[in-house]
Amino acid sequence: MGRGRAKAKQTKVARQLKYSTPNTDFDSLQRELSGSGAPERHDPVDDWAEEDEWRRA
Image (cartoon, rainbow, N blue to C red):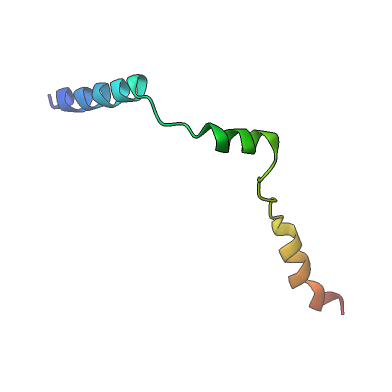
């Protein structure tokens, strides 16, 4: 007993996900896929290298 509400909620959410049509920004997607305007990735290893400089001196 009590499973009815949970199952109904799951069914409702699944139906919303299945039939929803999100707004897609195709210009932004194109820029991301083509590589233009994409931010450079930050490499956290570089941060550690700078912090460890004092140990080498």
